[in-house]
Image (cartoon, rainbow, N blue to C red):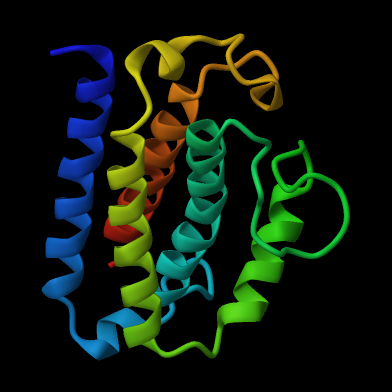
Length: 163
């Protein structure tokens, strides 16, 4: 198995783990704040979906040979910049806090599956070449896939510890 397929297999397995976990929860569990934060599982999922949109934009840009067209977030510093993440997360939480669970789940699920689908179209060579995409600032595009995996893993661990 090559590196690309190894990463994509891990992402698929993680998707299925999240999907099975979510299917086993009641609405009350999904909407009850997790301690020690005030976020619910719904809030965590919308957070993951929102950041996934940036990952999708990177993969789409690689496939189209252009700069990424990121989601329409508030003007200001790069959301990925050091020290800005918490501010961005607060904006995501406030913006989507009233979105219904069914929409949150549908957006996350469709976004994750789209991310998996389009990542198939990037060659392993392009995925691993750190000099291939100038907008990746020297990092290989594979980092986008790995970061998505790590982000989902970080949050499922926190959720499982909280419930």
